Amino acid sequence: MPVNQKNQQPKPTLLHRVLSVLIKAAVLLALLFIFDKLLPSISQQTQSFVVAKWQQLSLLQQELPTEDSLPSPLPEQRLTDTWGAARSQGRTHEGIDIFAPRGTPVQSTTQGIVSKVGENTLGGRVVVVVGPGGAGHYYAHLEDYADISPNDWVGAGDIIGYVGDSGNAKGTPPHVHYGIYISGSAVNPYPLLQKD
Image (tube, rainbow, N blue to C red; front, side, top):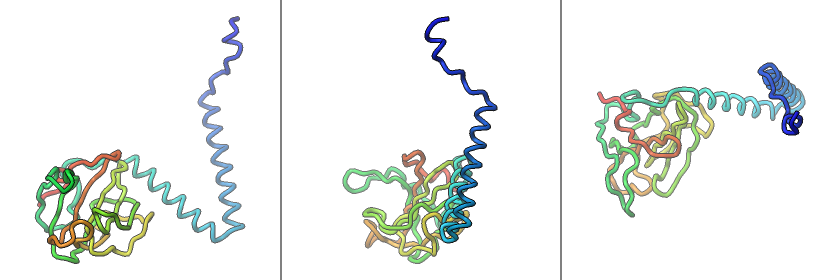
């Protein structure tokens, strides 16, 4: 028998792999049970973390948005395809602008997990929701936020913020900049939104 074949380990069978996963799951459940009994305050955090991770996994298994599959973040407002328009500093527009009166509620276009509620230089007050397929839904130039926090679950149609002109839109007519990012790259949201 050649030397190479003597040193090779046999490949684990499906049964061995399944047993390995079950043993790891049992150990994890035992540790969670111990934390639950010994540290009640950590228990709530652990449960929230487990629920959030389960929701994330479930979202990743779902299909990405398709043409005409998403409701508008501002129902009854006119949609215009402003994707790719020129912007300052040689940039192009990575989303669309939807104009509405200041303070108009902005609705999530999808179910998902809130990943950001905060500010950045260009977008001002922004909210990011990670939806089906892991697509990031970016809402910018908000006047204010709804009562949401990172890791919150939102449904399609839930209010996430209010139309404004924050960030580099200061002084322009109030609007929401809506963008979609798939695998870190911007895609045109206009074809994915339902038009009334």
